[in-house]
Length: 422
Image (cartoon, rainbow, N blue to C red; front, side, top):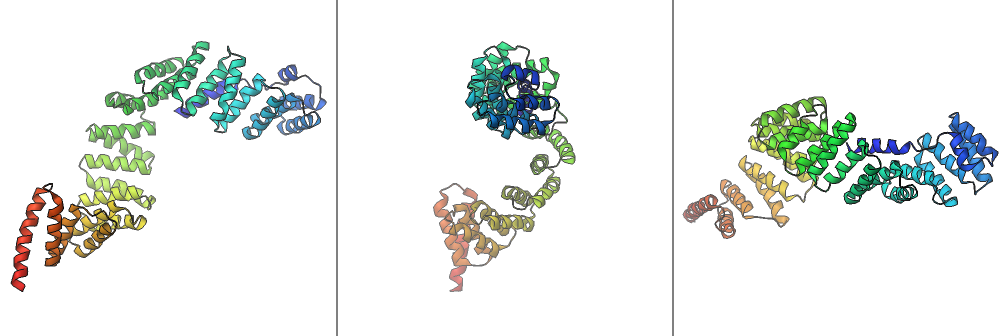
């Protein structure tokens, strides 16, 4: 949505470009025949010929700012903003403060993703013609682009003072206010933008995001529901419905979205909704293609592994966690998960090996010691199990009452068995 508003803003500002040779001649005169011929070529849309002639005019008279300006303008018209920039700069070096060059240079800089550099030129143009709406609007949009919402807010207000009927300025002001968490103020301007221009309906997605960010979930859901064909809105809607406990609604929303426009992120959201709706098998089916498509995505594999773990598919879960440890051998979280599913899945030797990696990384916890003791106990490594149970008890401090009770019982039994074998 920000891109749409920016595009509309820039199209309004771009209207200032001088595309007719008559106006160019009024500004710069016809002292050079190459310039005059270039203006004719430009008017006839013979852009290559115009560039050739304006370049010749500029070379013949280095002080001819008109040739530099027209050359820049021609590059603008064929979509070569980077080439245009240097020629606008040349024109301004010859004729400082030239309004049309300041404004068009600023526009070219914005289109080449250099809003910060455009700002002083928008300011100069606005200062030179303070009653002109277009440079003030451009300045406001550039300030928003560099994420200076307080300054953008003031600039958009000045733009609206010059043109109260501008939907672009209303929507931009809404965005600037929203980024300052002035949600209700922003809502009024988004509504006004829509009133002025119905194509600004999609700015309500921005409003819904503001409500969501400010934990006003019901209002966010209401606005997201307005956009059944907007993928971003549906993603957010599905996630919010999951969080709000409407798991059936979340599944329906995200299922339809994934069927039409599947992405890894959307598959994860759908899987989470399935989990919340107690449909783990469907969650697994939803996420598996995403894992296959992004095999090196650690976060995705961890999610998938836990999903398999919760379905007690321990070998499959262990395979996922093992892949993660191969991708990042220093990730303690993955080693812990691998140890847990191996031990619960009765793969005790593998579980102990994973716990050794946790110990080697210096991150062993009382929980690790308890699992270590369980594995050693099942492998009939009695002295080692006793030692691990005792270390667990020493570090547990009453935080794990059930496990501590079990550990004390096993220590008593194991010590008796050891004594018998002597």
